[in-house]
Image (cartoon, rainbow, N blue to C red; front, side, top):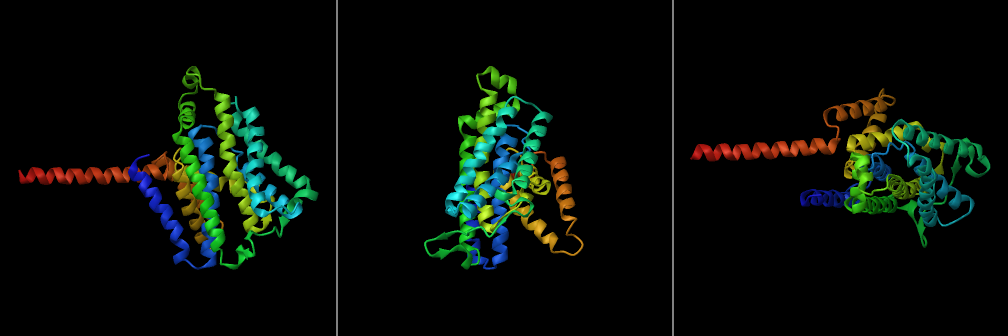
Length: 331
């Protein structure tokens, strides 16, 4: 990453850190919290989808596993909600290790079918084990976060905002470090030319397994936080609606960018919520998102990040051309 791009990322995150100082409305802060959660899920999905080239349609399963792990441990076992959230990341990583066994050596549509079937299996387990998971009704009244005597529900979502923001920051730094490491370069090699990468000594199966496990850790933590924050866990987290929304964030933001899905998550969360508040557009918002996804992929397969890069390069080219023309006229 260039210094300019790093500086832009730091400025953007600094502005997000200052949002609660300007926005005091509890509901707007709630939307930011949901956007941060989706940003973590989408950006981690980009590690396996965008950098490894693995069409993993079971990524939301890791999120759901984190949701139910935190809910069961906090509500039934009465474990500390903080510890329950972290346990969500551990169980999600174990689920990724389980699903990676058959996926490691599969290609193309077979990866999609196996990972999607795994997500449906997880949902059926949740529905069938109603004594533990609550079945179709889910788990409600999950304990909220608190530090000492300070309860997070009494400050208009301020504490939850900064907790979600910290989770997003740590997740983003982790992902950027992974993709910049030699391991990240090996993932890109597998994505671009698996045969050549294998001939250079890169293990396709091992790298795929590690990619899935690493992408699941913060996804599970985000799921655990989601359950603790909303104080509910329901089978809807395994549904196709959640899957398609998260996938649209990855594709619209830019596959293989990490930051692109984060920006798309913020934009789409507020866009869909704004459309839900407009009479007659409640059900059309998903159609609009689908059309936006098709349009972005048609004009810029690299997503919105690619479009912004084109605009920046175009502006720079025009600026240089104007300078050259001015200098020529003077001489």
